[in-house]
Amino acid sequence: MVTGACLADIGHDVIILDIDRAKIDKLQKGIVPIFEPSLDRLINKNMDKLSFTTHLDEVVREADIHFICVWTPTMEDGSADISAVRSVARELGKNFNKFKVKAPIIVTKSTVPVGTGKAIRQIVRKEYKNDFAVCSNPEFLREGQAIADMMHPDRIVIGSSDEESAKKVASLYKDLRAPIIITDIPTAEMIKYAANAFLATKISFINEVANVCDVVGADVEAVADAIGMDNRIGKSFLKPGMGYGGSCFPKDVRALKQFSNTNGYDFKLLKSVIEVNEQQRELVIEKLIRATGPLKGKNIFVLGLAFKAHTDDVRESGAIDLVQRLQKQGALVRVHDPLALLNAKKVLDDKVKLVGQPHEGANGAHAIIIATEWPEFKDLDWEIIKKQMTEPIIIDGRNLLDPSKMRELGFLYEGIGRR
Ligand code: UGA
Image 1: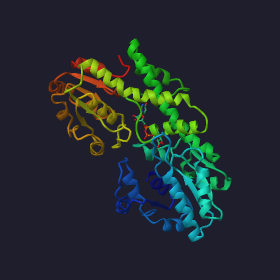
Image 2: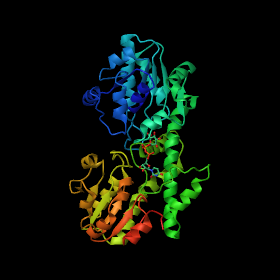
Image 3: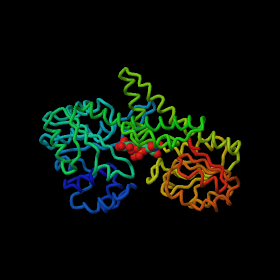
Image 4: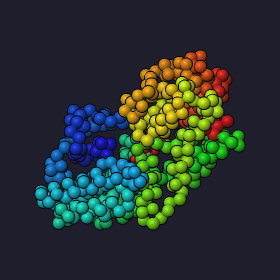
């Protein structure tokens, strides 16, 4: 939707197709079925250049370039399930054939393992004997900032086996004035995984540094600031906490490790990246137990459920994982999130109490855990919250609050790698 809306905004005619009728019905009325800041405004602004449908035959007759943007979820062994990509390719091939379309270009936006471009070519070729091209054009959009990331990209990557179609795809983005890298398809597919896996590695690295800071009495925030000032390292993605979550990093790190393995290479580093990520949630629980004792029967209030702030998405959220681990230890868990309560309700056990107001959750709590870095949590009336709690314990899994301020208020405060 973001890709479609932004392409329309820079002047292209875009048809958005989905097999989910309900989503398309909403979009036709200008209602956006997901939460992404400003997306509804952008879609409504460009309704004259956007259309929405569930009929592939209509799309195939109208469009020159076909973007595949379907999901590629994780399978049990960690590899990416590309069955949705394959099925779109098959349907495209059949319809190209039916309508005798001239030289269509198929572009993968979905994150797909290296080799998928080749597989798409073979699938379409079975159905359609004339000329067509396959390109890979991975996206680097962050949830919550997706429009800004699409409109002001650091780079645009296009993988293709022929220069002409790569140039056609590149021309779509010419007004964005971003560096464009044209390469072959396997390289473009690999760039996407390497980017996500590198950022995830940075997070696991700083989490391990934080864990060492905890045991040697150093302060990870100062360490991250100082190393980040080195241009070769950079400041971003050095925030320690409960580990990375969301629908991309966990899935893509596992998939890269898995397809490296299937191709005979053991990606040792990524094994540790995953292990460290999972360990972070357990460390939060260990800190909690050190502060409050065994958790059986204790009221624990978890502030934040989304996998990061400014989204309602709880997929692979560290906060959800944490709640489930707390329940296993016998804790009575209450949770609050400014946006993600509805989505969390679908995945959490009925015994977890969802509260609409932070103060409701704090009442009688033995401890509070900050699990998502929502800025508004900083501005809560912590003095009142302390009075409401049974024990004044805060475990800050996101290093969001000011430790000295919290301690001055009389809290037993523990962050991740912070003094
Ligand atoms: C990520 C990438 O940042 C995008 O470039 C990419 O396009 C996208 O995946 C994708 O593959 O579609 P996103 O999943 O929206 O975007 O989230 P991020 O902002 O990257 O955060 C991922 C996770 O890492 C979150 O749980 C966040 O809290 C955590 N994180 C991030 C940290 O723990 N520390 C940090 O310093 C930064």
